[in-house]
Length: 241
Length: 241
Image (cartoon, rainbow over all chains, first blue to last red; front, side, top):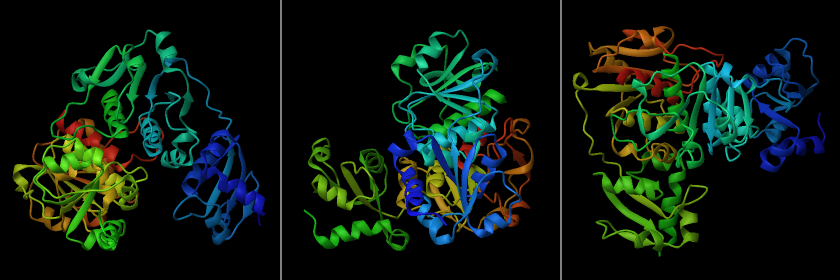
């Protein structure tokens, strides 16, 4: 059983003030909690139904059994699934030197679902480091974490001043812009940066000047634009192809 | 001004029973309504604020002025934007013979946002026809329409028995499956079909047997899967590259 103040504490992760400032975060559902257990992140507590607990071996963390009704009260999901975990924000993922990797830079991605899907897509293509502007959606927003499908535990996501990173570097900087060269004609290097801009405004003027390789995904039909996560996937696939 | 029964009528599009069975549908916001006005779809009525109306020329449809408060009551969006249009479901987009086009087949896409984003992505790459199984999210779900960003007025989306289509055809059928050949090694023809499966279950067994070219998007990192709309974009980009 959990008491009322613990219930209220878990519920408050629905509010930005709480998930942004608290030193812990929550993830929900068997899939996310399984990924969390596999990772090196520190779990503080797990709240789960008897069903979920029975399917596990001995777990190295405190587990509190809750019934379906209590889980429903704690959960932020429309259909709560078996388990909620509370973990510490301290990430074990260390920064990778820019000249040893290919980093994704996100300039003002607003939609939490888009950010989560971008992290998941980056993880698929082996990207290990994502740098985000401070007006990008918050990494610890539960909607972001859930839509990464677990990739949030494997890809380092750090909020930084993107201009400072690009000023200090001489690596190639690829950026999707309207007047860029066809991506298909551009050979992309294995180290460097890919900048993805805001869903409606694109890449901000303060960053555009650092782009050494402006590229675009050629359009064959009539849509005005592509979804930011879809565009990221298409460019990363070309990068790896 | 609009009366209470008209308000209730517009509000009921929030419910599946209404948007699925009604002979009309609604779209919201200046961008969507602009796309609708540019298309050949029949608009029954437009509800808009004075601001929006002032920015238009003479419109060939009835326009009712509503204030911001009334718009907020009519709207299904968190932040209502200026205008809501009511249009007829009768599409002017005619079927295209399968051997003259490349059709996308969706087998059980559940999430309305995913379906809308897939339609938008298909439109970008020049796909004009999408066939969906009856367990795919409903095309006229307002969440689907909104996330197409207007592509719903340009791409024909039809609910059909996918098996029947594939049984009757001798065109290449591409399908993303776990044990497929690398997409990068597969040359895709300009006519044929691409089958995209359900977000968690993939392509159903009843359709798998019709796939003549099983392909996969090679994985370089650790994510278990890609979002369905992202995968569609990556494959369509390869198809066009």
